[in-house]
Length: 334
Image 1 (cartoon, rainbow, N blue to C red):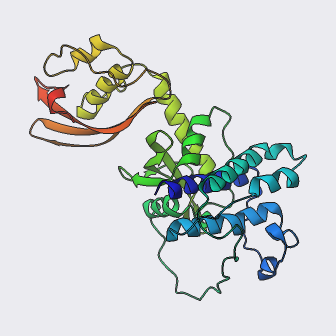
Image 2: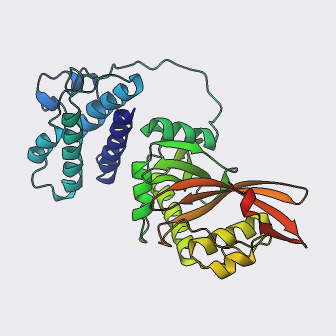
Image 3: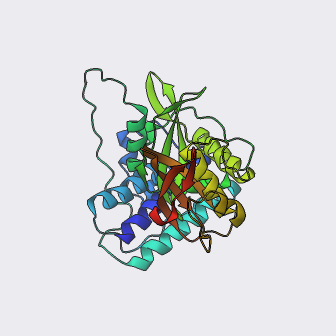
């Protein structure tokens, strides 16, 4: 399965670069564009169009069918010639060369890219459907990366640093859960989303806006909101939150652990520990996020997502109430 995962990551990264370069086309190509006898459909499509409408659909078809990969690929070599002088496309060229290396290294299958173009379907008339809820749109997008689930006029990326959030979105391969309910924002709604990406699991904010009465994902807005969430946590030192409930106290404790502040961490323990556990190097791109919790009869279990440079895990942090305050029961945590 590793080869399909690797191919899926490359497909997502290629699509991201096409969108970043503003060459991604929302409208389908006419049927005549696929009537070509030349390599890369050079007489009927631009190179960018060939990537979007031929290469990416074929890669994702192989992944979905668990089919055979091509014996070899020369997409990067062609990109070097085709995009010569187009400085903005340097990252795309490098990425396509990496894609070639991946395909040529595997030497599997019997076909080369491109193969037959995807079939042209005539849409049938259907009765009006109820709008799809935001969380279903989010789940569907992260499963398929269907561009039709994106807004046609997205926001611009903000001016602050979005590199970490952008990398998470770029390398994401699936959505594992959506803790909590959608939250209203000025532009639409936010859905808290746990993605599997480079370095494991990450909590991100997927932003959706209404377009013709349907919910659609705004990727730049999502990245901007997620980046601000990352920066917000990075700039706050303990306590993580002033709330004194089970959630607030457990996040204070994890933030102390993250910062290697053993003295304050001990103050939040139900029973003394000889040694406070350390799971991170205290770097700014190592994050601890609240996901959800249950509480009954003075006992709470708080789910916390830990993402460090070397590992990721969802901790079921056990909390116990004593003297009107909540404390971490570390032996009961797993």
